[in-house]
Length: 192
Image (cartoon, rainbow, N blue to C red):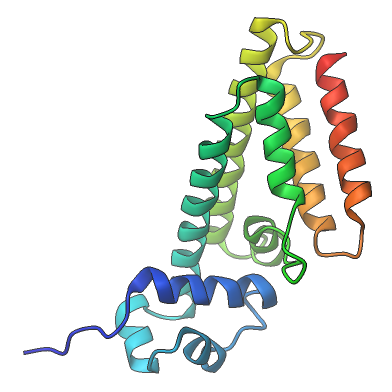
């Protein structure tokens, strides 16, 4: 009879996610992962496979968590402006000690050029985000809340690019005031 696991997978995946998010894939060693996750090396390999397989699981978990948070807020928004404002606030507001940016953006820039699986996962996440944004913009245009000067797909691509830039700024000492000024400008563009 085999030994039962002494850990809950999502709990240790979250610990691995934080380490990868802070340090990046290349700088994170298996020893650091074992220590951060609080499990034995054999358990890590038996449950998650190698470092790369673990990273892919982490990206999936990050995507699930991000999607759930965004949907929970945007679906509660009473206006499309409020929904877009929430997306900006979510991307801008970080805990004081978590200037890690976005795990998707970090993974795309670090590994996307040479890792097909990571590139596919980050591209899909970016497509999904643009799709959600385009739906919100179309709804705002249909209700007259947003301008129809630009089509929803173009605006969603521009907004997503702006959000990626804001997530990169999260890894720098750029202040909140600057990030909110960028968000406010884009929101005005939607109404013009």
